[in-house]
Image (cartoon, rainbow, N blue to C red; front, side):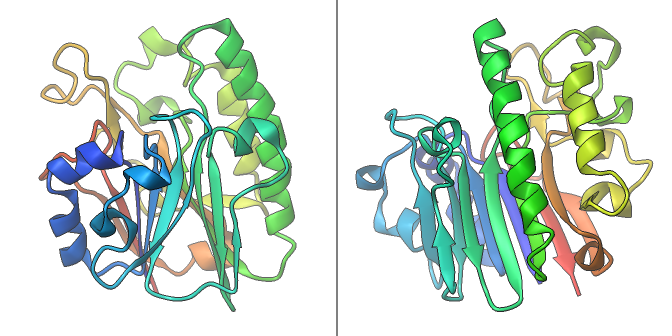
Length: 256
């Protein structure tokens, strides 16, 4: 089982950067997408159903903003695009595909970097999505949640940790939320399970300011998390950096 997650920073922009030819070569089982920045009418046939994949999407009400999706070759038993939580549903931040033995979720958690109002909004979303995640652990199925969490967990997860301790994405309360999520018996950070000491190779996002990409001044804010039993099936993981489709890089994990 091969799963890829990537914040596209615009699906149309990613197409222009040859994302789809690369995707075809990966032969992944599931590809989780975030930040589509598009509505259904904006998607070409390639974006909707690339090659042998079927695409399922949740769009934001606001045009050109947010949005998530999942590509799969299998027909899901159930598709969940809305949770009844306006903060999440209205901004297209969650989609879930349920299969016989596994649930795949693509999630895009908000950034609070634009100011106090959005940071407050972010905390509200974190509180509500935590409860959603918690319930998934009690369903008796394997679950993999992929996405841009907009939080770096530990100092190893970003280059300039000293200068970002008071910035959104590395605030104490945000990091504590992840620690609570990854508490023993709950969710497992699969990449960190396989690479416990990997710092600079683990980054998945680089600011467009300065020369962040060239100097590898990055953050690890994209995750695949799963229940403990399924995390133990993870065999290898990598962050693909040979090509750039976005300001994020694809996180790829293979499971038995």
